[in-house]
Length: 578
Image 1 (cartoon, rainbow, N blue to C red):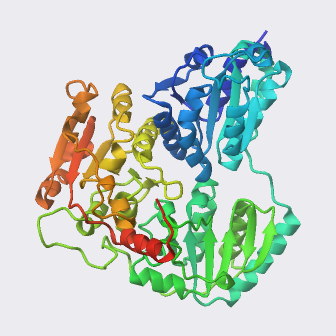
Image 2 (image 1 turned 120 degrees about the vertical axis):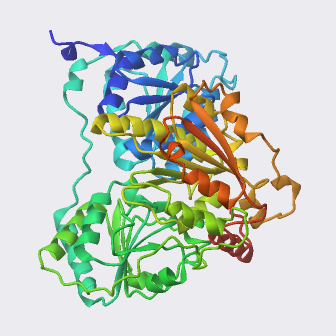
Image 3 (image 1 turned 30 degrees about the vertical axis):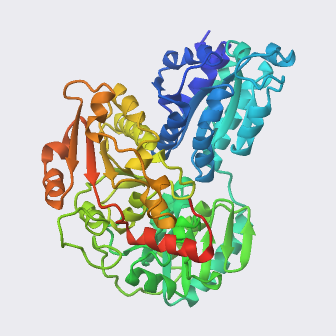
């Protein structure tokens, strides 16, 4: 009898399904309620990534999913899952598909209300899963063997389709229960539900009327174009129309920034003058996957009227003030692009764009002085980044600074503009670096170079991730901005306050402290433009197969213009953004 037709253990079934949808590394921490399940990971050809704590593991799983399309995290009941909950909440807020598997006490223990460790001592074994349910698109408590295979399939599929975390609670006495192995012969259906064709065509016709009447249309691409897997259709529309195309801070890397109709980053008042004027004067704006959060709009400073806007989303289309629920953007955008390509829909010929160069928001590159300033740094990096780089930026100065950097072709960005949990980027860097290796193995190409920019305050929250990187022989380039504290917080409130200070660390010793072997990592410290220029021009540094850890010393109060403008908007509206 074929193996796939035989009953198999629940643990094996779960991890085989995860491998089927592209997961190759499992993040997490061992705990006594998940140990049996972990034994199945190598048996099905997956690799275990043991992190220093569950929060870091959650951040890493998030970063992995943003590159690979989906990820998995394993924690133990109560203490483990609650430690990861901040990371999972961030994945939920930012539409990142992470399957969170929680090993929990046996069904017998739960029924009897036993007084077990990792519980609240009140016999309530569902309190933590109820918390998890609030930040998951699908939840499964695996307590009935005849339902388990279907439950696993449902959580993984919904996690992928909705691009949000899924939660699986796996009791210890269910891990070795048998399920039907033959189910594995039928791959999970990961296709999106089709749109109602009549509603789709009606909506499309309404869109076309406005397109034909528009004289200065533009395209604005936002984060959910990435998260809901609509980039192919978006690129087709950009190519078919030739329209000026802009991205938001959250969607950096979504569009090839080397194409002639790429116009730059629109973030309300945080945009360059040229970008702001072109976007805000458009008589028709196609927004694709819009997320108009405070940091994404420089404190809600968008100046685009809904009367001039057509919004494409994963669950509805809004044409000015008319909404079409139940339509997914992929099909509508694809049909719109095809009508234009086939000559069935005329669209205004746009005036040529002035290609955005690597300049700061102020419009000029600061060259005076020796200090490494933000006005100098971010435009300079645009000439250093390489095709295919994966660029991770932390909430704070890096997140706002990267707006002014023009990316090379095929570069991808990871940031957490909406959730904004400091420390996230270091964990995400580890996950992205692992995903880049997995991706390279599948495509038979060299792994993408992975570059992290983070502040020292943020880095101190999740510094142990460097240990996990070394353990897994990962080789990212890590830049830690040392400017004596929480700069983003200083600009929001408390410029001189001691609560925005952090303990100085000897950053160049970090790889050594975490056990780097000879030749496995190298540290650098730069405090002047000349020192940074020399480092960026070093080919061994640029292409080395070792972890590179760079301390970048910058002035205390210096910050990107976008961050300053967002802080000012916060003060005007009396709204704390941190």
